[in-house]
Image 1 (cartoon, one colour):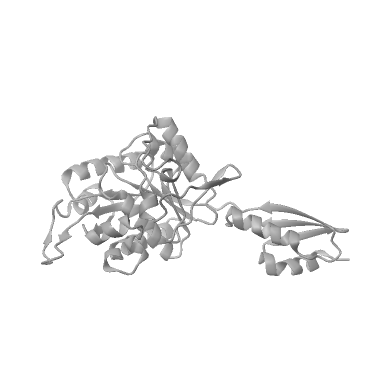
Image 2 (image 1 turned 120 degrees about the horizontal axis):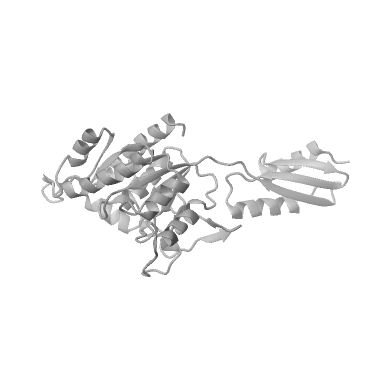
Length: 319
């Protein structure tokens, strides 16, 4: 008669320790731990087990179970548009994944989704499994969900607040598998999407993106105030488009000013996370779907530094 230990030993090469068995006569009931596995991998594992040769067993019953993964949500926000928030979000997600964290990216900019292009998966549509969206794999090891994958290319997303907030919920509550950290690329401003995200999904912290110019910093201060009033910690502020080095003569100019975000951080008592230059290499890489943080070039260094600070913050805050 085949016993529990024998069944588990036979399944070990297939299930890698994920299967526990109970044997009742010629029937085996198998509990399959699918924590962190995407739906396709779960189905494939179950099919392999059902096809396995188990001596003395005529019937196999399989139940799937998964442990709840406590994910940290990091909101990347700005008070106004056009400050490079999506570029920072994509590169932060990729660079953070390179530190060993399991990272997913949510393009929560409902009205202006750009992450499919930045991450190199334009035109692909996510599928659903058990009523939950399944994030799309990207070439950079960071799964992505975006409104850009749910509507026709070029189609206007003319939704009122509740519809946009509901869409955000579907993106965040998707089947993220083993991801322990989600980077949320938020739309600019302090409207319905931001409020719903804070109320229902509660980020662990927020990274604020601004350019050095005064107008952007005024709006960045409003975004900071929203998170602080809601009790969401501010991880820090990033100064984007900070300095432009002429590719011909090497002279550095500051078309948007210099040091404004660092000064604002000091005034507001929040960390300053560093400067990202106005670099054509960053723009061309993003347009090509190959964010700089995925490579080893100099243009990715600022994002690698940002991710290191993000990892330190997560590690020191129970992440």
